[in-house]
Length: 194
Image 1 (cartoon, rainbow, N blue to C red):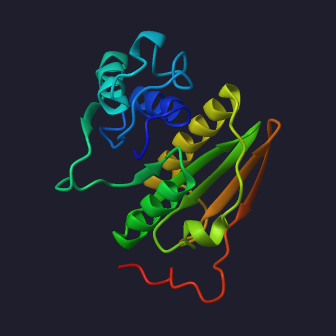
Image 2 (tube, rainbow, N blue to C red; image 1 turned 60 degrees about the vertical axis):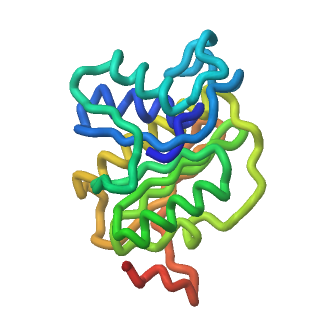
């Protein structure tokens, strides 16, 4: 898991309750007012390192998983990117692609957001989600996007998405999802999995 903020919190809780195995968390920020009162953090955790607070809360949430800080020597099965900044999300998605890891990227915006599932060999996040302005997300939208992202990650890991090498993008606007397959942008080298 890249990120442990407002979008990642519901995803982390969902994955912990699903007993996914070991969850490695990577987040260098501190719990802030926007995180407080979310699914994962309480107001008394404001100012604490988000990584440590998330690990503590997840361990208390479920004994079905192990939760650890991400380290460079671990070998994850898949990556869920719920980074708070678009630039971090793009970098994390590209690292996962280069490592040959299936991944899901979730970004909340306003009353909705986007979730992009990228199984191995599928068009990259850059093809599926061109850069653009995002609005500050509302708490309900962040929770919906995070939960949807966790479900997509499980589908990717279990290889339950239709079509080999096919990704999909889910746009959520005002509570209504629309789903479409992703397409490779002409000239993108994402067909080269490293």
